[in-house]
Image 1 (tube, rainbow, N blue to C red):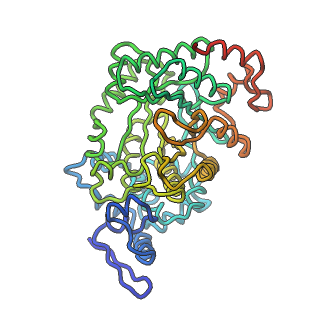
Image 2 (tube, rainbow, N blue to C red):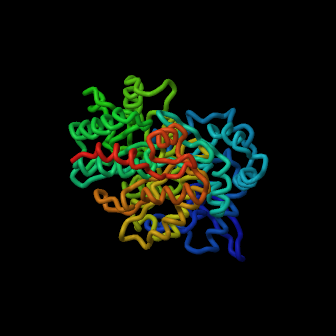
Image 3 (cartoon, rainbow, N blue to C red):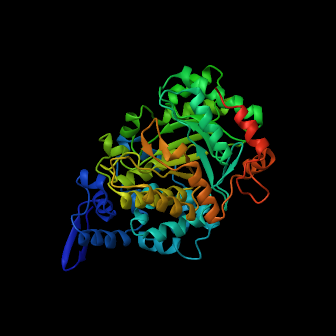
Length: 460
């Protein structure tokens, strides 16, 4: 079915829903690379006008990727909650935007309809919104998850310690973890990207974190961001696995490029549940996503990169994860060229994920060959924290020496918490105060005794 609209005296025709959504997207490198972007600002406006008049139900009637050949499409349609969708079922995309920005759309209301919001609906409405709209709506939504800490509460900002090392050196990783703890970071999780994807190495890293956690009774959860099959091997060996990690994308073929499918993720989820390391009802999965992943695998099916990214959130939603993280600028300038594109993409991802009921965090980051710098990341960090982002990364010096990209640092977390009046997860905050790292006014001020105890644990 084609869609048409007049703009500037020209009649524009969009051959199908995929084309309409792509032409309505804000300009970005990946869509230009794929030949999907609007050829002019005028065409983009025409596409948005046509999109605004599109009934939300059309997204369920006209799948962007064929149902018969794509298990992500089948997941989206087969698990769609029609009852949750009912309050918005008669709306167009434009009316849905107006509703989201209205006083009627409270956090409680949005939580109730979240299971009825298909990813294409979230992506479609985001294309009709300015940055401030994405922030305003996301701010209303609190998605709270729990393990040893409670993540996503209003007024809180959690941090994942990311203590990577190019040789997986346990001393270097341990020093980075202790550095992060003394900055008040780690309440989202202590998550290591391993330099080598082996079960033996993942087990050694997890055991080191577990030793530190138990020694000081720290309310944290750990994760080694190895491939899901590697983590399953660690579980089979009796390793202390808290969270199962996996990178995911928005189509079956793209997930196949990551070496996963829904059956494998189901098996991993069942495996980590069986370990019973967490309190009852805890969230046990950690997913990372990023715009451009499907395109880089030639698995986007002609769908624009922001919409196919939102489809990845349907995969994540299946497993009620503790953490979902858009690694927004990591994939490079071929997909998000400069700071402006990275900032827009980060706000889109955060908005779409939270609208669908996911606990969204962000790796506020860029690669060194992108037209971006740390000032751009300061802007995105601030905007996401205003929007109620659940957590960010804490990388020593903001420079990941193993993955070779720029992210946010421990002191960036202190900045965000200070200027916006945010605090760590409550369980972790209590530990920081009891251990002498945080004072009674919730300021990170390590006491000599607390610092000395942690430093004594630093590996030599």
